[in-house]
Length: 517
Ligand code: XMP
Image 1 (cartoon, rainbow, N blue to C red):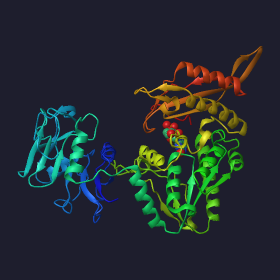
Image 2: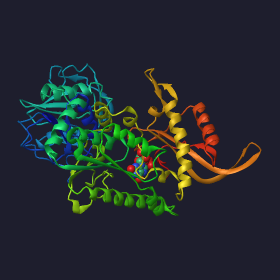
Image 3: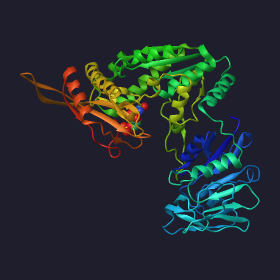
Image 4: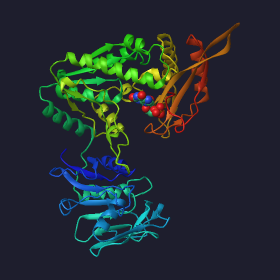
């Protein structure tokens, strides 16, 4: 990248949000741990210090020496970042009164300060801190105050260094994005040229350079991330990319064939491996959810590696890892909060290097890049689907017959969601499928009595699950229209042999989870 902003992460919940806001300004940025500034990287145009769960005066608080950056690059401290700069320069930071949470208004501020240019009078900002700066060093100048917080923002005299105790990155700071724009564009001089098209161009060039004529292996799952990674690599190195798509027999109805067809249309060099027999055999009689997951994970690695080993000249393993999979937000104990789970365990003797071309992108950016690459919308807009597939949606042991029942019921539900159109908030016609984060059917381990014609039936029950969410960490059950639910229920009971009852899951996460197992 030609120019970027570095965000030093001191562990705040909103660090990712700062990154998102800057990307939305079409400026490229990277979040790095607070002590991992990329010294020597000439493309860095400015630095932002994030918030933190610590107090600056805590023994174990994250500290960093800004000596090598200060005076060379513009610096903006946010919340803890602002307190840290003030404190380490001789200012005072103390526990705040309880009023420094939530909305506040910038009653007085320097209208002509470069950071605050264009900010409206009494602009609302969002405060969220347990500490506050009670005194600043002599060479610091207060540039904004609220009724409660005298030192809401400061600038260091004669330097390109600012601190704000509020959070410009959150929605409730109404001119927050403008302040961030003032910083990254006017102060740091970034050009707002970061876009999906520029990402594709730069990444393709980088991949060509990095990989040269080497051969690369990539595991496809049918999902958005691995598909976009594959098409991007295909554009860079063409037939030197070999993709492997394993069918464990637990995919959706016809999914293996449909997705293979899509991949071939995209010009990818894909080896499809039908390993369903092996998975069914190894899963026979196993009901424990964790045991099922372990068997599937183990078998998957075995099958994938057996295929990979055949590509004897491979030098790289590519993966569709994306930014949220990797972000290692530092919590109090320094532990990784979320680590990515799509690394299968590589054949060690192959000595493969790892290539992750999407590792700096958020999910919606991956989708935009996918569109830029011409990947069809039905692949880009796909719901997330768990790696172990329908195995975690069949409660109890797995048999091919149960998979067939679930695939048929699921197909009716998902196709129904795609076909049912509603108006969104802007009056545009969208499908229910696009309005929910994820949906699927669960095959329950119960039978119940029903009546069909003159016959008493005693058959299986299924549950429909559809949720809204932004990140799968929390989710709410989707308020699907009654008429739609009635139609799907009717279709499933009439068309799927073996099912005579349909329920709708109305639990949210937490305390429930999205999947039943
Ligand atoms: P839960 O059920 O924990 O699911 O609310 C959150 C998200 O993760 C997916 N999920 C999985 N994905 N392997 C995966 O690759 C798994 O074992 C697995 N379990 C759940 C789930 O579909 C949802 O998107």
